[in-house]
Length: 360
Ligand SMILES: *Cc1c(COP(=O)(O)O)cnc(C)c1O
Image (cartoon, rainbow, N blue to C red; front, top):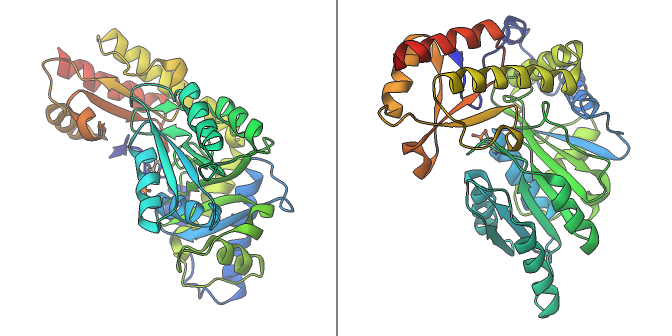
């Protein structure tokens, strides 16, 4: 079965076999070697300086990393403005509500790009009326709900002019899409092993600017980002990590480097995503978001009028492909195809043949 859903992904045999390495106690030096290698390779994926940035490993799914980032990096007296144009932006607001973090949302149409004018107006209104000012802005880089790649440059300009820090959910973009870590408004990016890095579920991480940790809040026990970085820097860990997921992450990162890193992964995904787009267009299936505004990781398409998602899903599953529905209200009109994981152009050819047979 090939997984065309947005994580977990189809593994390479090399990563799958890495799960079968020796049993390992997480208090032994062999485990800390593994942890150190994962942390340094995560920084190397975007050529980050370990003196300036830290990778905090977390046992959990991508949401654990987003939650750890938000719960720590909006300081006790801070206030967060959330850019929301999909399910994952909405989830950041739910996390803030859970921790009672002062926040507001700028909710846009989920099919559209964030409205920079509305965001600037909200930031400035808070400053002008004497409300507590916003200290941070949070955004989802690749909003997996629709496949839209939110443009971080415009948002970081708004942040720079106002001295605001940017927190990014990069769960479905880290490893494949470009991220500008030289941008000094960027405070942290949360991500996971089992999307563009091709590891297994169970290991997530936050890439955080070290100088932001001095002011970090400690609102959560298990996901406390400040403590995770402090202990991991000392070759330590507060709890039992998912040792096997770390084996797979390290193997996946070695493979990622050998294959040419983020730029090569971007090119590979882009070629597959365009193959899907042009192949579906030939069958009369249109993208829901223009290709130029979409990621290379996943794209959303309009369901043909007389085909239900269930019928499409089941027919393709019988051919060995798992695709993904739209989320929420979008489930009736959209379906999604991810090109993450160990996939080739021959696999996409077979997928397109499956579509063609069904639509005939
Ligand atoms: C997958 C994803 C998440 C996290 O989902 P989990 O199920 O917790 O791994 C968060 N944000 C985005 C943008 C995602 O695509």
